[in-house]
Amino acid sequence: MERRTSGAHRATRREGERSGRYTDEIDNMLVVLADPATARGGTAARHRFGLSDGVAPDVARGGRLSRWYIPEAAVAWVAGRVVVAAALGLVHFLAGSVSDNGGRLDHSGLLGWDAGWYESIATHGYGGAGEESRRFFPLLPMLVRALCTLPGLSGHEGAVLLVVVNALAFALTVLLARLARAEGFPDPAIRRVIWLSALAPPAFVLAMGYAEALAMVLAVGAFLAARSGRFWLAALAGLLGGLCRPLGLLLVAPMLIEAARGPRSASPRWWLPRFAAVVAPAAGAGIYVAWSATTYHDGLAPLTMQRDAARHGAAGNPLSVLWDAAQGTLHGEVGTGLHVPWLLLALVALVLMARLLPASYPVWCGLVLLTVFTGSNLDSSERYVFGAFPFVLVAALALGRRTVWPFALAISATVMTVYATLAFTLAYVP
Image (cartoon, rainbow, N blue to C red; front, side, top):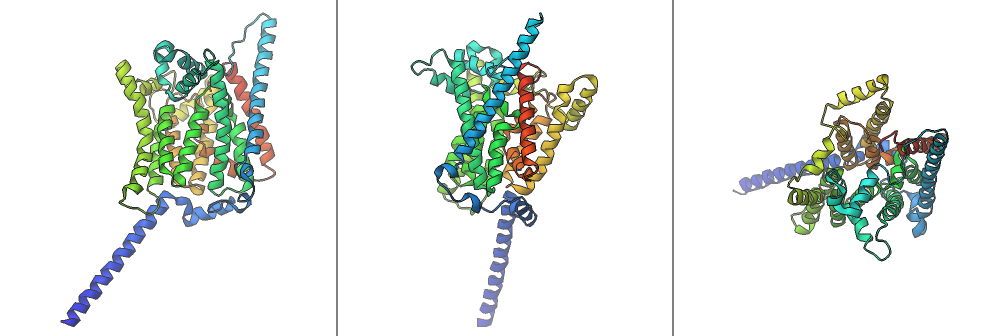
């Protein structure tokens, strides 16, 4: 009897050990899926690019201002505004020269293109701005509208809009540096992140009255909060991100990946903030869609309007979209063809991102790229890719050679000036 009992006990213990090993294997698989950069190959790649597991030793010292890289961010922010001012000055010079010769050069400024819509919504509301204004999500114009209720600001919606977005652009640079620091970037790479965030070719939109600065601040905030386990804060950033732009919906995917990381618990204190962070971006977009349905009896209009051929276009085969755009250069559509090399470069960066950064980053950027590729109209695609900020992080790592970086930054600033000039002369859709 004792032998049978002892044998049964040993069998139960062996079964428990097998079950424990199986559970450990599942946990390890989940960790790798959520953070493939920590797998064997990913770790080697990270080390080759100078990434450490946690805050890099060379950025762990210094006072509060240096830890947040505020002086460097301020200099880069000013440099970005100088480039935009130079482009505006060039446009006004060209317009004057054309006018002196009896011609006319149509041009715009910091409140041109989509910025004019945000200004109009802030000034007149959706009802006064026209039906087409509903494709612009409400967070930025409503923020400006609220600020303009303060004494002395009424009637100055355009100026307030520009002040808000440029202040947010500075906050974006600071937050990106903070996130890079948290992800183990070495000090030189963090400084490259700062400069690229201000002088990347599409970065001129951060000085215009666009929602990019606000949307990127919220996206960086959501990642920074979720990666550090502050899921209630991530939920707030995600909720506002869903109210800011249609692409804010895509934050659901990275928040889900981050929520699945780490030890699990059945306690509401564990799962409730994670659940909130996952559903918050969809809830934010849902608030605007519900308002549109109640007010205009067409809740999906803010999303379906983007599929108009003159905007993002109807859904299509990504390969066909790229091929048609490349062929367009042979038929005089140079502007369309210029999108292709940038998008191909983004695909290469996405592969590198999957090796260097946790899964939430490449998954989110992959969804953004898929959204761009499936639209028949590639206008503004550089702005959309820039809005997926992990591409800036990868570029900062890839341009790490001392002999390469100064030339890369100079070329980037030059291309930014060219793109800004083309946008202000209405030759390029930002």
